[in-house]
Length: 198
Image 1 (cartoon, rainbow, N blue to C red):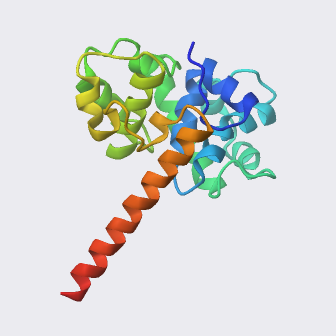
Image 2: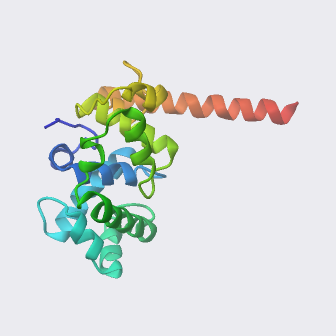
């Protein structure tokens, strides 16, 4: 079992470390929302559902309005509680239909990195970038290393990178990742401004 430090909250990180569904949901929630709060979301949700481990079957069958209520808080599980509750339910339903309700079945028997990337990209809410980042997280911190996983993860799979949640192991690396993201945003803004000025 990995020891993850993604939310910087001991109880939330403990759940992420032992519950593959919580980890997958944390990645789902990591969108237009502070990274640490996104990965703390599964713990909040588990507490509100009164469970120790999240269940894809339970989430899939939950009344959508009840689930949205759990997402609303306070505090809210996400800044867009309604849409993220619906996306969470979509993800849970797909896991029940294709993977017997087991999040880890998405990656447990993947023959290679390309297969795993394709499976992740098929999940609701997982675009190309999110799929690569999660693949890198699995490889770097969860010992899920099918052949070609680094190549499939692209730049996020690079050893020693500080680009994404895949590289966060504590407060220091969190600050480094945040700095890298800010630099990338500044570079993109400068490039856009330069293009507009020509």
